[in-house]
Image (cartoon, rainbow, N blue to C red; front, side, top):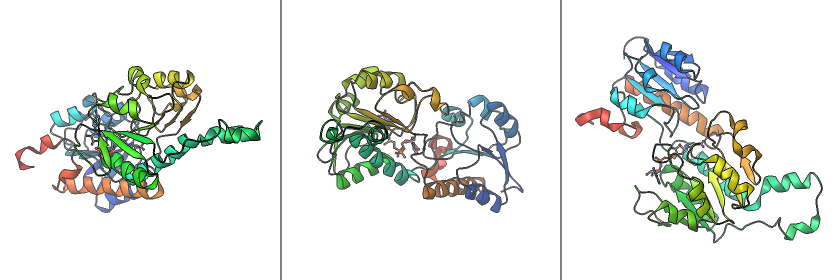
Length: 326
Ligand SMILES: NC(=O)c1ccc[n+]([C@@H]2O[C@H](COP(=O)([O-])OP(=O)(O)OC[C@H]3O[C@@H](n4cnc5c(N)ncnc54)[C@H](O)[C@@H]3O)[C@@H](O)[C@H]2O)c1
């Protein structure tokens, strides 16, 4: 590695041990905001860049980094960096597959209970006027045991959710993922429509890509059972939030627990803010005491290794750039 190679860090890493790992390896760390003009200016003499959402590093910005050798996202998702542009520029794009999966899966299990028992709604109700006799009426929950959990995407996170929900809650797990033929304890189905129509609880574990954008649109939401609950801890934009808000308002869906919305970080502007039977979270499913430290160190080590000329295949999103040597 050349002396004092420079790493541009777009938004501070999720744990200070990330920056500490970079500095301990003799790298200069430069922090910038998520503003593309700031990023472009900083990239002029940078050797590497680490970014995380809500930043959206465009191809035009990456082109300013003529010295760049590697770019990295801060987690499993990598939609904060233009993948096509990175590939066109021959830049390896790294991410952190699986590192935060246990944290997200735990959140999803909590979301299943939250949705089944409508915990926040009952909390709100007991703080104001409350009728004790409703307890065995419409405040009774939906038991998870024996219900169908539909998963779209069954990679690191979806696979873990399937195992945990199948064993801990005795749910029937059904999944749709064109890249997976079979997984123990899971019934695979051939289309997203088929899955959506069967699910009592539907949880999304897909990346945000041109193919998955708007995957849960008004048409697909209308295929869901009115008694079903939706959990989204994947990415904003995978669900049409306005259509989801309409479905909840019209009582065409029982409950939603949503960690990610379109237009982050302006969660307060989401149409879901005014929707009933909807719990909103703040893109925190993958953020736990343990996961943030693990992620920051993993990402920093990947960049250090890449600048030393060692690219670990499992970290590289755009394997094409490695060519035949890969
Ligand atoms: N809310 C959070 O805090 C948080 C944290 C981490 C990851 N995430 C999101 O979760 C996503 C999934 O993470 P992962 O680690 O499980 O990724 P992964 O790559 O291990 O699994 C994703 C799976 O989705 C499948 N898939 C892709 N397109 C699909 C489609 N159109 N239909 C059905 N399946 C499709 C892939 O084949 C793959 O098996 C990430 O891309 C990220 O956007 C969110």
